[in-house]
Length: 157
Image (cartoon, rainbow, N blue to C red; front, side, top):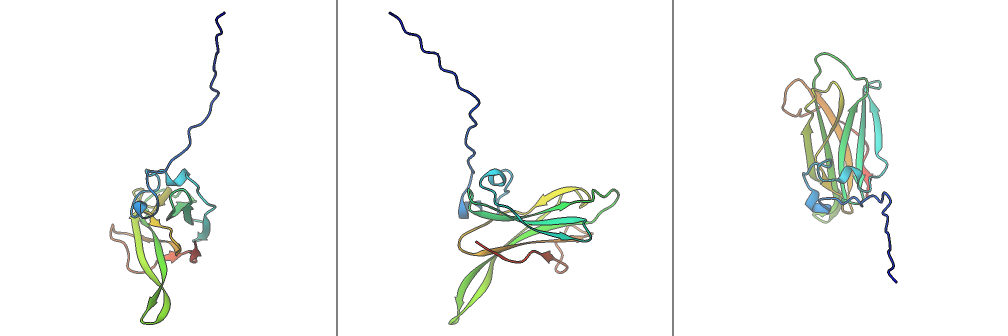
């Protein structure tokens, strides 16, 4: 007697894997590395400039990394300034016998959309027993400004 077994695979989604983890994610794009969909936590948000912008600190447990994202909420038309976004990473370190939060990484990125529409995100910084904050600024040149940055509060890992 011949037995025939038929197997049917029903729409099982393949697990999502990140291309980097921890320090391997440093200064990489969260979108192309798969981190924006891998263990993404609820972002810390700040609403700025009367509802024009939403600034987010985003973290991925799958990538063990953090980055900043800013969204232009009012979808402005016309000429807009360049939108800059960055994530700052601090570690608690002993400096000459006293403990301080010390900035160890700042990852900047300029938006390619001229700051009028859509979202822009920074490159990533590792998330390793430290704290982060998201910041953004606007300028009329392609050089990141030295002042005028607006930031979320720091968020511990």
